[in-house]
Image 1 (cartoon, rainbow, N blue to C red):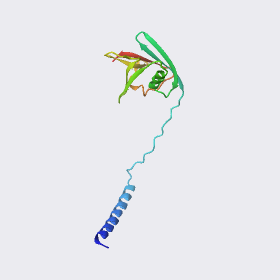
Image 2 (image 1 turned 180 degrees about the horizontal axis):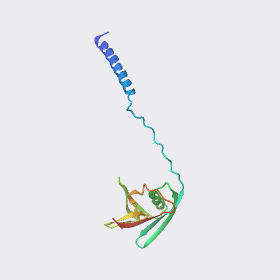
Image 3 (image 1 turned 135 degrees about the horizontal axis):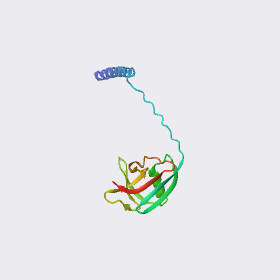
Image 4 (image 1 turned 45 degrees about the horizontal axis):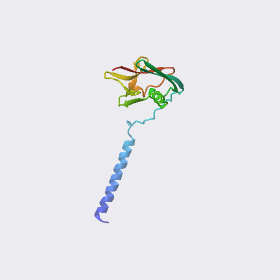
Length: 144
C-alpha cells in the first residue's frame, strides 16, 4: 500500500470515531426540547343570515345573504358582488384592507369607504372578522 492510501484510511477511522463521540454527546444533552404539534380547535360551523347595507348618499341598498359563521365579511362582499348587486375595488396591504371604490364611486380627499359593524370601523380587518348571526354591516363613506 502506498503512503497516501494509509493516511486516508487512518483519517477516515479517526473522523468516524470523532463523529460517533459527537453524536453520543448530543444524545446525552438534557436541554433539548421536544416540540409537540398544537391541537387545533375546530370552530363549530353553522349558517347565519347577515345584511350588508350600502349607504351611498341618500340611496340605501340592503343585501341579505346566508353564509357560514366561519366566513369573513370580505366573503360576504364577494358573494354580493358575484350576484351582480354591487361592484367594488379593494387593495390588500400587509396591515389590512382598503376599499378604493364601490360601484365606480371613489371617495373624495379626507374621506374613505368603510365597513361599519356596531359603530366601529372594521375595514382593515374585513378578511379576518367572522360573520355574526343577524348582524348588519354598513358599507359607506366616512371621514378619515
